[in-house]
Length: 399
Ligand SMILES: [Ca+2]
Image (cartoon, rainbow, N blue to C red):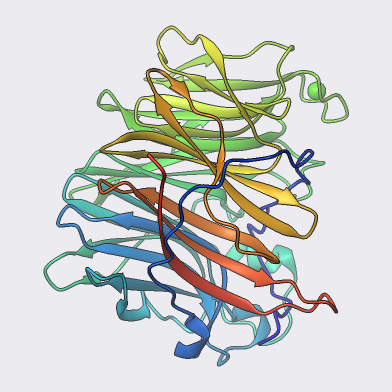
């Protein structure tokens, strides 16, 4: 099945070409499961998120195309429930509205799991302008019911501005679930005009808070993540300090906790791809992953792990691992480093999939030592036409 053009609001995923390919120690690999969703009649289209529930059940959410909807409404949010052996046991839409779904975020905190995503208020048929779509996007949040093994009916957050919610994030401490997003006053996804602000809304026991302004006026906000840390919502983001997007050397990493904003990096750094992991913060700068282990102190340090593209910080019972998607011409090679005695080990190839380009993925470092990778990949063929597939693979690491 050929990948088709689709309308994405948040298709901001990009993978720069990685540096030179050095010699890597091959990790022991063990492909245990393989599921191709095209057999189920859908084409996965982006934004894979996975989580492990408190009872050990694994679920995944992602947007996909079942071929039944018009172009502008095309993607629906699906979830898959895996059995203990890693096979898809259940698979259905989270909430099929007939309208477009985008940008899911999945989080588990304690016994509670939530998904947030964007849903369009309108159905468009085959044509729509971005400004129409932007004004119609609404944020939905649904809780997963572990007993009935399904997502409950979503809470639809009241919109206040008519501006598109961008860079949707989700955080929870188990009881409170917060959505965090950015708006641009010009609805400018090209990021050249208007001013941008970050907002948060929290649902507690079914009640929605008013929108809370996390940061106002920074132009432009590039990357953002959010987490509950020490009982409070923390939001980290990178922004252009002087609001002149033509000058790049002043982009800095900021942290907002308890209403207080801290600037964490100076102009010697070029922070990108910010992500929380437990009570730590990770980001890339100048092609390397850096970390802040103590958010109160705010001291940044290099991990020594190169990353010119995309990475994930995996946090499990065995500790942390860094998963880096290394670009090798048309291929993507997942590399993994493990934290040991406070430092990260040299990266090893998690698995060589051959001539495969990985576009969206989610991974977990499980207590049995495996790293599970769910990915949307394109097999690159000689004529550059590809075939989409979504696979779940258990990869046994070498430590
Ligand atoms: Ca600037």
